[in-house]
Amino acid sequence: MVMKHYAFSLIFLISFFSCSLSEKEKLKQLEEQVLTQHDAVMSQMDKINQRQRKLKAYLQKADSTHMDTKLIQNQITDLRKADAAMMNWMHQYKNPADLSPENASIYLEDQLFKINQVKKQVTSALANTEKNTFK
Image 1: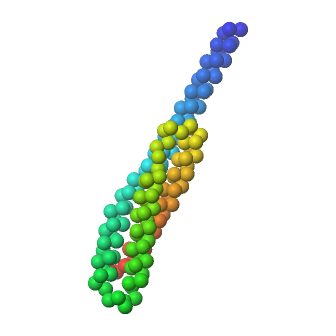
Image 2 (image 1 turned 90 degrees about the horizontal axis):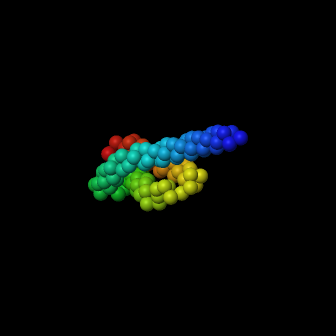
């Protein structure tokens, strides 16, 4: 009887720790996805700033009645918004280490969604400026 109890306890502990490790591994992978997306977006921030400077310089030289000035102003605004979105995301992001595994998973899923939205915004803003012949 004691042997059966011992064997059951051992099986329970092994399955508990294997689930726990699996859960920790899932959280680690999820956090890596979030940070990978962050790094991908961050690598675009210099390009955002360079494009803003080029477009501002073009606006200063352009005739104020030129048709492209409104388009360029809109593109500068989009670039600023994309930059601000990234900065806002970074300021609100917190390491989930202090959260329970369930809450950490929910938090990281939410953060992955948010950083993907920022990535779309940055990609779109940059793509719209690619069309300019006056870069």
